[in-house]
Amino acid sequence: MKKKALIFGVTGQDGAYLSKFLLKKGYTVHGVIRRSSSINTLRLNDIYKDPFAKKRNFVLHYGDVTDSLSVLNIIEKVRPTEIYNLAAQSHVAVSFDIPEYTTNADALGTLRILEAIVKVDKKIKFYQAGSSEMFGKVVEKPQNEKTPFYPRSPYGVAKVYSYWITLNYRESYKLFACNGILFNHESPLRGETFVTKKVVKGLCRIKNNKQKKLYLGNLYSKRDWGHAEDYVVAMWKMLQNKVPDDFVICTGKQYTIKKFINLVAKKLKIKIKWRGRGINEKAYDQNNNCIIECHQRYFRPAEVDTLQGDYSKAKKVLKWKPKKNLEDLINDMISFELKQISK
Ligand code: NAP
Ligand code: F7E
Image (tube, rainbow, N blue to C red; front, side):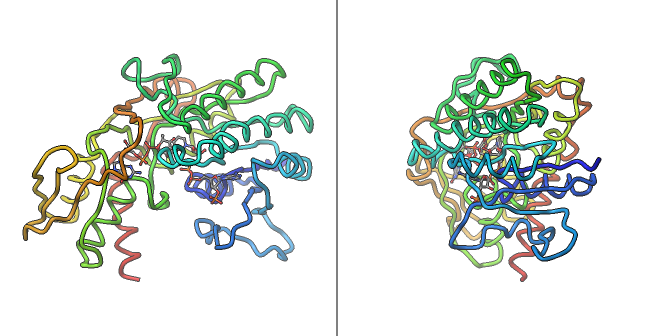
């Protein structure tokens, strides 16, 4: 029988890549979208199907993970074989501004889906989008599936709740429920306010005289960045494994934000020189124009200083490893941005 996936968070970066991947595998994909006053399906443009078409392998439903009834109704109606919970207020800095909403969506949202699975059909497989932000103020390096959590934001705390409730429902109700513990993953489809997208888009626009300056926050935190296209494959592999389990997904390499900026600038042939320290550190181009400044507004009340994962378990059990490295990621993001500018 044809497999049927239901994706909460289908309109996001990962939702778009996962949908395309599952459609290629022959799945019928159902996605949950929120009602919005502006168009929120742009990332799905190339797979969107006319709702009046006779045969559709991609179907969208209105719903929200903060609304239990919609969650239950959609799961009952669709009766999927697999559910991917990618829905979240996923911006760490914003989670300090709207902690209650973040907790409702990112923690209780997961509980609502799990409860609906128990009611509708315990055979539905479940993937929970966990995050390296759960490791937060890391207690060991690199981080693996056994590393204790120490979240540093309302977002991280909510994801820790979701991790444990997923594990608890797996043990209590014998659900096939898995936690992915995914480190930062980026792509041309990355949200505009995440640091990699801000840097690539900003420097491409500066190079093309569309913008003069870019404002950033902490340049010295370190991240383990991978490509979203690789990471959605790992999500799917977790649900095809013989037993439900939890997996760290990462590249094992880490870079500072400053190093990322230098790599992007080099690709764009912008000769960057850094001057000053702390909040006064600035980057200048070859004509001595200041093109990057730091601003207090982009610093967080608590920072996650360093993240570097160990994906040995995923490699051994799922036969997963990242295909794209940081250079491939930067090339992909730059060529997308330059195309947007030339449009
Ligand atoms: P994203 O681009 O921000 O997408 C989040 C998705 O969740 C969007 O489709 C959004 O819908 C939806 N959403 C937000 N609140 C919702 C609600 N109340 N009800 C239903 N849907 C809601 O995030 P992403 O980068 O694709 O990440 C996917 C998931 O992985 C998230 O759970 C994120 O926390 C987690 N994660 C991401 C990373 C990463 O580096 N990308 C790493 C680890 C974990 P709208 O389009 O309407 O806003
Ligand atoms: O920040 C620093 C910032 O917002 C990365 C989400 O997908 O990955 C993501 O969370 C670092 C931080 O990602 C700016 O302080 C400097 O140290 O791109 P980010 P994140 O916070 O790591 C995890 C795994 C998730 O689960 C999340 O959903 O960059 N930084 N200057 C900046 N960050 C932003 N956003 N903007 C700046 O101007």
